[in-house]
Image (cartoon, rainbow, N blue to C red):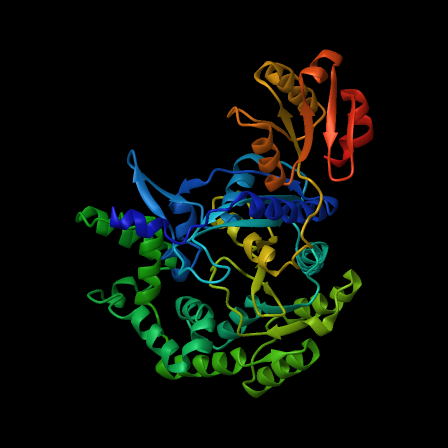
Length: 488
């Protein structure tokens, strides 16, 4: 029981007044996404665990709510992107690309509760599937800002990174694919804990892998042949390769690469030094790009494909974005291992992160798509957006109508009046506790409701009375609806 209580602690109750405001802000954002051509989609909250294990990254994997039911390993959805791509692969891959979808719904992560962070929260976001960079990237980045602008958040800072450039630079240093992957996703760790922490993580990642195998066994074989031979050998001697969510072929492929790894200490150390200098580059786009070019020249590295990022920076002003709000940050990691190109985060003036996203051109294939498919997207944390949205002035307008009845014989007529008001779309309540007229009136005022009174005389004449501080009139219900119904 203690574990259950701890699991739900930090999940938030949204009360009526908060819910109304949250829904209003969500609808404003959804309308912006709609006019940009994004169609709404809804998907199950529960997904197969394997969908999220491969590409989320170790930090987020540790925050997943996972459970087993009827022999199936399941999770509560921790984010939307993988779920949307699963649906795309299964049911939308025949549509004309790019496919533009938007979504709104809860996600679940076992986070440490703090300001703007709950273990259940709402993401509102988009995915554009089938559109290559950089034009789609510029459109999506501008759209993320437009949604915030629509709800009154204009003072924002955009952090823009590019994981594809980092991967290319590390690859040109001669490190293995595995070492490059570990280094690439150590950017946030390096910024927070320094170079020593990354060096330790790299050693820990490789420690013990491949021990007990002689690389000479695979001499003269290509990778595919080596993997087939090793897989057959391990299975024939009864080794259990069903470990976690990784297929046996992936485990053996990693083992073959590990056995053949020729990462020399000096190569790894050079890569760590380059990554340290790279992650320190951040600033206005022009200055940051110049610093990146200096670093490439200093280490005599191949061009990592800067043209894509330079084109994105050039396209941004066409969409009305001020480059002064953009900081290029080559230390931006975001922790999700499916990103392949540009990534971004948007924060308000206080530094509260409201939105994040990026490009993930390899995820469709990784999740079983028939062919590679470029894709880009982002998501808002709706609760954080609500926190950052300027508070509206207190509402003085009524939120609905209370039909107050005087005398038990008038109750049937009061119910009839309430039903007619509801048929006209007016939120209406009718007392069911048989309280006095004064008690009903006091309760209605506390709720901020307009008051429509019915008495025996009103029932006889099929009229109602509207009471306010300024008015006490008797009229027919159609007359009331015509004169005052729009105020309810």
